[in-house]
Length: 515
Image (cartoon, rainbow, N blue to C red; front, side, top):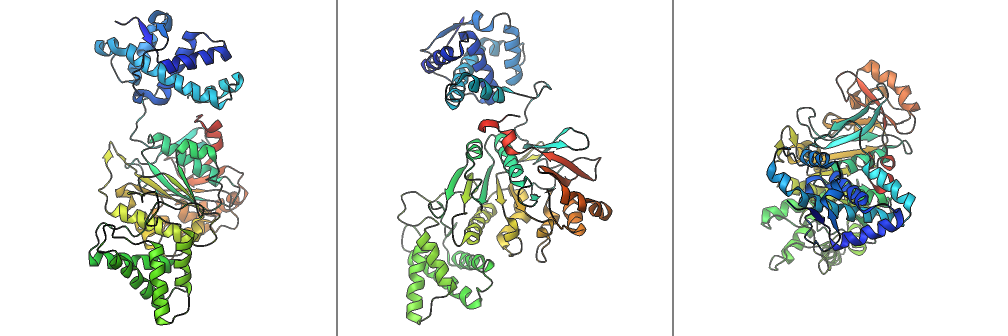
């Protein structure tokens, strides 16, 4: 069996830099690197080919604790301690973790500006773990830590996608500004990304600009930020699965409904006119290799139609002109390519500086997401856990819930089987009581932060509690402290659950997961 660990050249360079600042011995730093990598990457550690660095003797690295390291590795890799094949190869596995760990330590070292105390502080947050021992992580479960139960003082969490416990993954967070609902939302999204190993994506519309400017959140979730109108979305809303006449007609009418949803003055004449403009856009490209138009081309068609008919500019014309001039979506001639899958990206769409069309941009993205969703096979279920492909996050949801967006309603109604979740954040429980569509009956998770003037009926229906309890909660909701919330029951012993939520900035100290 090999008698030494051959580190990479890069690891040797990092090791020497760390030794100079920390004054720690080689074996101590190598052990720290090994443990950090084992905790953060587990069995998914990248293989290290380079062996041109420092050599660490096996006896020096393990010392008298070789059986401990062997047990630790076998536990993480789910191997029997008696597995001789794995025992024989484990020094190579240790090398992979040592090299990977030194890369992780160097990231911390650079983040700390090579300050010894700051280095240890950040390292502590990354290494800190629960004291309950080693627990096998179920990568099929989306585990969310919500906070502390006010009554039991116990940490409380949920497995968002556990089908035998929860009907669907849809969620609502309600509260007035400053109560903590945004921090709670960011914490949940970061947990989802981490728990899913970044396989579950999200699309978040940022109306205040605070999410896109939160560098820690963007880093932790690996989200891509699109700042409109300074940047454009790499999305063309007119891409279809096929370009047959019926498909084009249906899509044209659906686009028209999206326009009409946000503008009550958008009447039958304008709807008919827009449908014809979009059909002409597809027809103009029918003989080209790329068969979908863009908003700039539709604007040119509309201008020609208006001039030919002697019509005055109206809301429709101004909307098309704004979409073209602001260049909010992908256009022909752009250097990038339109993305194939909206559901396959994690992105924050920053709308706070966009002077017009905020809701229409969101509607067109939602429509695109629904079209993708409708063509997807049902998401996989394993051991009672259903795969969640992406989360659609609707902040300032009170601006949308009353506008009869058919695509949003269809995603809420049909998204469970396709692995699409919808998270809402709004200011009042009554926002979800809409005559045309009852969102409340499809919200599996509901959290009410501090709110003023809430009705007992809205509380009762959002939290699924009795009328008596809802009346008692009215005063409590109005007086709740920051970062405190009342939710639908999260266990079998309470009618509702009161909790102190864990905000994002506490859970991810220095931009690193610190639970």
